[in-house]
Image 1 (spheres, rainbow, N blue to C red):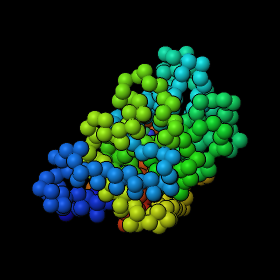
Image 2 (cartoon, rainbow, N blue to C red):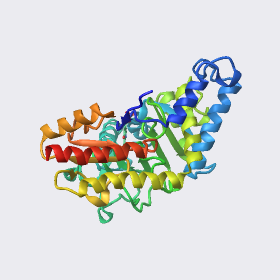
Image 3 (cartoon, protein in one colour):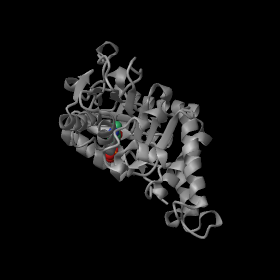
Image 4 (cartoon, rainbow, N blue to C red):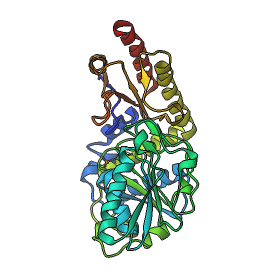
Length: 363
Ligand SMILES: *Cc1c(COP(=O)(O)O)cnc(C)c1O
């Protein structure tokens, strides 16, 4: 077996132990005589998987019974549309931070819905001109009195910048946490709604895991299509229609793995992995970190080399050594090393050694 060190930003590396468990369970899940893929989503075997996955996620996030956790198809991007469709009515204002590509996309979707409905969207903490180097600074947050909600992104996956300190808000706070959920210590109770496309830190692609305050789901618009209402997913325990059962099962296995590893251990390991790469970048002029130091992400490490030709060679040479997907996002170029929870330290060590060697040969 040859596992690559997969630096992809999503779909991303899953824990090997989880993949092996999934493999062992694949054709006969715990003596049921069938794969989880083949089971009825209304049966008791699947029901146990579903319930345990949600319970473990809630425990890991430290959220209580005032939250519901639902699985919604359409990935992180569908949430960009669902949020304003549910909560932005005529005359309302919503605050959106523009902190990078993803929060910028969320902002655009909200503007579309606002235009249809006669609502307004206010760009708060707009650091668009400094993308990809930073996130909003403390004093930059200017929320609107009476806004329906404020939307932020905790980690901008493409820039490699991360919000280390949450803003103080007096309106409901919503967050896209697709690329750092359970990868850094956060107080999840500060959010009325948070979500993550699963394919970064949580499991397979194609769905978002959404945590929403119960009372908030009940307040959403009830005139929009049924499947787009949070209330539908909340009231039916994500079983209104057939959910992505296999993805939810794998997500549940990842949650068991996070619990077994221990959150504190995982956060410390993530910081240590990131520090090794940033130290390698900072130890020479050859590599140049893209993000300002105080905003550096512990999940997506972005950097440049002296020329684009060298960057292309760096990516190709690394690939030949079993380190894949180091090319930065097509919109920004450069190099991006993504090191989510499941990415092993041995892969970071291999990258750092390669960086030194590459500079010696090409610097
Ligand atoms: C990947 C990503 C998304 C989009 O997720 P999809 O599941 O591809 O729609 C949204 N936000 C952030 C921060 C991401 O990293």
